[in-house]
Length: 315
Image 1 (cartoon, helix red, strand yellow):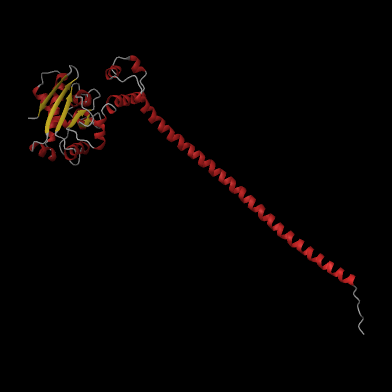
Image 2 (cartoon, rainbow, N blue to C red; image 1 turned 90 degrees about the horizontal axis):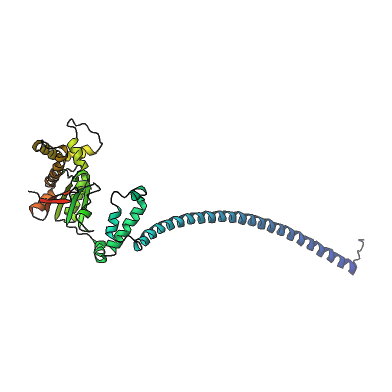
């Protein structure tokens, strides 16, 4: 016979208590594991955020440095533009005669402390005061297009600027300057820079006058006249270029052999102009314009020794 087990009410309460205690311990164990997992995840996220924050900080610093450099660069440009503009509006050298007097040779104080940047700024200021702001209608028209009446070939010599000696204003003349104010014969394979100037002036701008200006004491003509007949060359470019006027040299040497070298050079400077005028006829678009009387060719000679100017038509 199986023995009977007597369970008192107190024993049932104890069993329930132990069961609940085990459940509680199990729950605490689970909660501990879950909390630990959350902690490690939080730590990883914190470290990641920290690294991300450092990276973002570095990127921000780099961006700020680049922005600062760009801002400084733009600020520098704006400052330069403002300086030129403001000085153009407020300056004491508004009188043209006074400015011209300051650049005359013999001013030792000016020569000894010449500032090229200051010269450019003051020159632009003078232009704004005496031209740009003084004649707004003219420059408003020039904003849209240009209709020059002249194509002017002159020497690169610093003493013979056509704008000064002929008082040519902006928009009046299409300019070309080179050593000896020379124009080569039409040739698609050589001297395209001169050909393009003539072509654009005649074909696009429809100029009505082509003026070639020679001048006294021209260095290019002097080199042409003194160039050795054996063909030896001292310069890389000049000797080949001035040879364009070889016909003028031969003519002067033949017809004026009794004159001094200096006198021959002055005559050759005028004859070189005639050579360039004749060479202009070799350009088909120039020749057709002359034949149709739409273009006039003229030569000029400026003598800055005695202050005279000659003007003639090509016969």
